[in-house]
Image 1 (cartoon, rainbow, N blue to C red):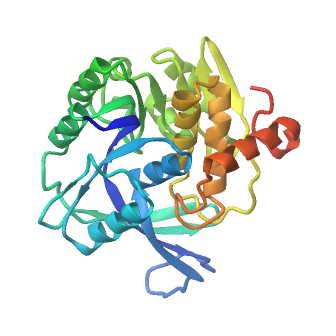
Image 2: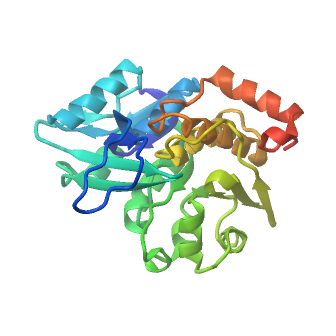
Length: 319
């Protein structure tokens, strides 16, 4: 029998090395010491783990090599009981490593990736065809040529589709955006990406333009919360106050998990799903690593219940 999933996740792992507690940002010719260091999983690992904690059945179609970094994240995924049935392991290195340096609420990255050892899209298509799922979530921007075949498989199952974005200095010109977005149900860029895509100077202006191409549109705005474009309206949902910000790495991926839990699993109103996303993203920045502080389902619903009675705590108490 085919594996049955709520959400199918095609996407790569990252090995994240995160330095925290810097007294100053590194400069050429000088050495600085951090107060702490963590090695953990990144990229789609974050969303997969956050969904697992929310008791969502998610299948992760990752690719792992035989190198140390692949083995490390593969072990973390097994220990977290992530469903790797759709994943593949290859007998050659597939290193995907990011060094993250959080500093004063922002962060810098140094990244290395090996070329894919297999045709990843072909692997995703085979894994999708061998599974049953309600929703397909894409953690990064795909071209029309790459997205089209995946969309066809998902639509044949009656599944909905969401897609995150990727920072690119030429986002406005990378594709015909209305054509690309017609292949998905919800698009989830961050504020900077949204403004680059639309060529606008304000987040609200970007949301209004994107909403003309796709409904709904979700624009993540960090500490400012999230913007929604739906049914001709632009709605702003405030972030939650979960405590001091320690590390913002992967907060958007954790937001995605919370939003998808509300939108796909609970079939909640869009603004309620956005609050769930804000809770997951807000909690994720209170510890080092994107999914380290990702909430359980009970913790998420507990936060949501408190927000409904304590408007000053953030979020949207009456979605």
